[in-house]
Length: 192
Image (cartoon, rainbow, N blue to C red; front, side, top):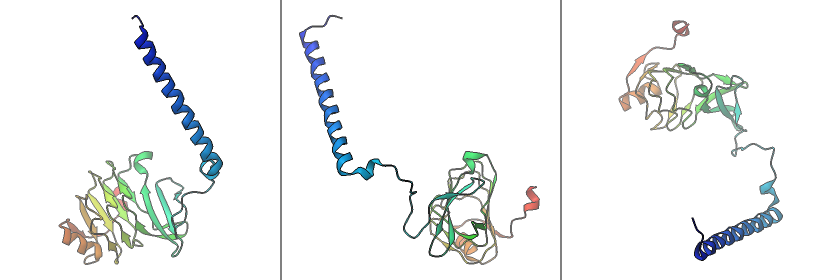
């Protein structure tokens, strides 16, 4: 390929534009470092929502959670099991860090193709929107508590069966949404 005057001129223009862009970005970087030094200095803080503790992980690394500082109650943020192993049964703990687990946050148990069973603790008080969602093989959801605040879309992607105490809040929710429900509770000896 023979370079003529037009090609050389085009290459020079492109090179000059790149030099100008790099120079401008350098000056912007220097300006930001001088006027906003906190942007560039790493912080040892973790992201903390107002009224809630820092994001933590259980010792077995299965759950990410926060503690509501006003009530000392645990909010499960995320189940990590599918990243660690291929567990078919998820048992949400009743307590973490000596605090009761009372809430499943949005998307807490989601996008997991391995889960067949979820067991919720009786301490649970709240199921937030889409807290259990996009688990295509989830067959049964167990809950043995009584009082539960359930977001209207909490189990929007759930196609399995709910096993719970008759006429509690989850029973009523299942009936209103057309989700199959039966009376009973989880028996760990069946799966051992």
